[in-house]
Length: 266
Image 1 (cartoon, rainbow, N blue to C red):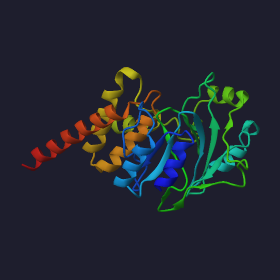
Image 2 (image 1 turned 90 degrees about the horizontal axis):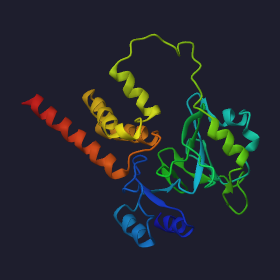
Image 3 (image 1 turned 90 degrees about the vertical axis):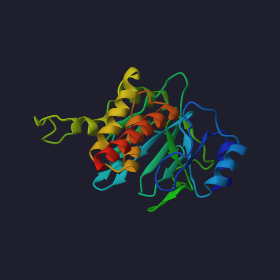
Image 4 (image 1 turned 180 degrees about the vertical axis):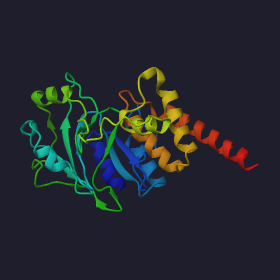
């Protein structure tokens, strides 16, 4: 796996080692320089089976999900602006979804958009990342979609027409009959909403993360699952917390919960 990681690094990408047990980075990478070849060799000596992700700094990804009743591929094909997506590098995910890679235009920034349409997300934040071949999980391997990608495997620059459409889009509203439910809102309601909506504005992100982590742990959610959910909430924030600040806040709340449990058991 290390040879693949080095090859990505030599192509100019920012490589991130990812745990095999999930999609958790094994290093702090937010707002940090790219790993060098020596860095990569050192990390993979410590974690030889680590998966590989690339930071979405010079490109963004249309992330198409296929799971359960969600058919993101069909929804994307039926999207009224689908014709604006050019032929470009694509990968097939272990669940049968797609990652469609497009170069960013520095003069026309793209923002993250989770739920652009049902089953389709835009992964674009400079501190986000995407798993790449030959990474794998229990369902199988990430593979390059040779049939639908350019022969040279290049990433095409996003057309300005597509960028303008994406800049205007909001997450697709849920169209269930009970979407406007008048049910009582609770602290648990807010926890669920934070996973999709993020941690709010820059000034309150730390407190929001602390409340989110503390709320889940207090409700008996497994710490590892809590960590992954907190990562999702942070990644869905307009300006996510950096890795160092995220880890510090998470550890602080975990330590607090461990102390609470210890006192309860005395």
